[in-house]
Length: 428
Image (cartoon, rainbow, N blue to C red):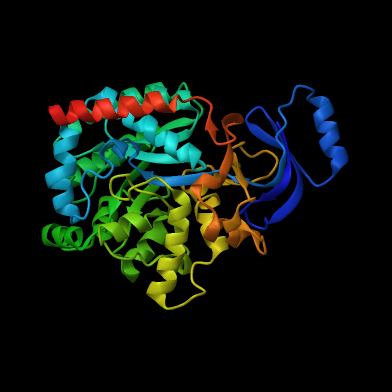
């Protein structure tokens, strides 16, 4: 594949260039501004698929580090409700009636939305992930499937994790993660048990941390400390841990997260909707924390649009800190690309445009009124671009979206399956 275009990357020392990008297999092998190098590449690859990127911008695909994709089935079913009542009275009763095949349908619908919005990698956290490995692989996206568990279902989920690990081993794009819901829903013993499983199998560990004031109160009443302190005492925080939300963290918590190398997944729109508060992201960045961005679920958000998350994250920090310079556009672009890649153990193999990197890239159509004129490209992307501006999506060297058309999904059929799945769950 050869792509002549303007390209932007948030890697250290990166920037913007106009030229050609070549993909061979699942890797970027050519990044050049020299026409003769592009011609040499085309001559060596006579059957190359060519995409004209004029008027477009090539950039790394977005990485959503906290998502509940199958909750597309619950989109708009429970809105304008406090978190604890939302969970106990609406979400968990619905989920208790779901079956694996319905979770698969919801996940497929979520992946379709993610891909069309330029997300090439996502970190999921849900049930029956062992059943989702094959569908995720078939749709072509890169994924970490976090097997979610509580004390109430832990004995059921651990065998599913074993099965998911075995199935994912056959795919280079699908990985499994251990995902206890939270410190207030999972006992210390089962949190440690999950971390031991993760270490034994070389998996990431992820959980909700310090999301609401209710959570803070519950943990302090039980353990006499903050959720971050509690998890740290249990020894589950390290560089293979993703902590979602981290809204209510003080300086001591923040120092712990930085010292342990924990990646924070900031979910601004979900936090706003449920009135959880504003995470101190600017302080996190200044302290050296690895901050990424996630959408959370399409029931608490209510979509999977990472462009909206970027814009919201920046504006929230500017408003909360009273500093218009906080969380600038370039920092946001890093969070959704290179920071996400680092959080998931890919280093400089993902989230960048450079030879040798994995070919997870997207094309943005700049020929839109809201994107013109392009005075500064990075702010144009972060503050102005929308999911609907994503024209082309390539994951692992495979073309998945072309001219805004999903190549592996029959969308009308998928919509019908989703409606039928919801009807069956409600009927139960």
